[in-house]
Image 1 (cartoon, rainbow, N blue to C red):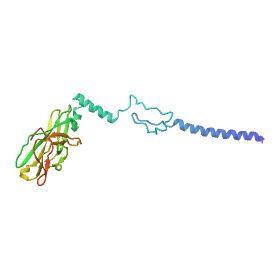
Image 2: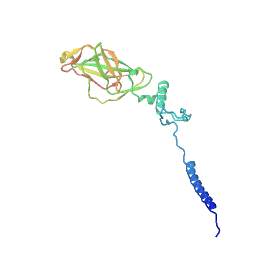
Image 3: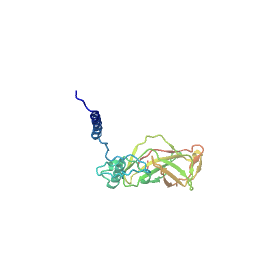
Image 4: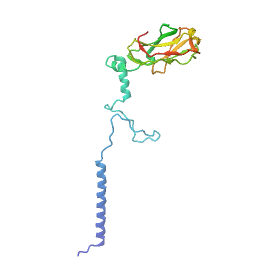
Length: 233
């Protein structure tokens, strides 16, 4: 049996421990080196950070040349192309409703009959693109000071259809009420009629020259019909 000094045994044990530690460290480093890098989708936004505690490594994100175009920007681009070209984007524009700012309103001539007063409310496409109207208009008689006269009009039964308006084309909806002299309803003489296109919030104001309208009492209801192509029945 060969005698090994105690100091030599301690050195061997220490060397063995260092070897094991080195092996474990190498395994740990191997996992880090061979892990998959984070995947970043092109064109997506970076996670939000607290602006009050910026990091020294943070830098403004600069979109690359190959990044995807945001959906909103693409839609805006298509809309602009449609309004300017009038060719390639015409199909897409056809399915877009008419906005109040793109329309001109007028009230047609009364066509009375059977104790009824019948006025066509006409909306004309004054824009440079094709748009659509579908459903009922909104309407309200107002005084010179802007106060509404009478209740909101009611809707007659009818199936809405989509009316396509090229620039300059019109659609009309009927406004009907019983002749106040026949019905005995209380009346007022409006200064104007407010007309709101379907699915819009802004209205168009038209001077009212149709005389007295019913505002309360029996048979004071005013009725509206859906839009149809043209300017009159």
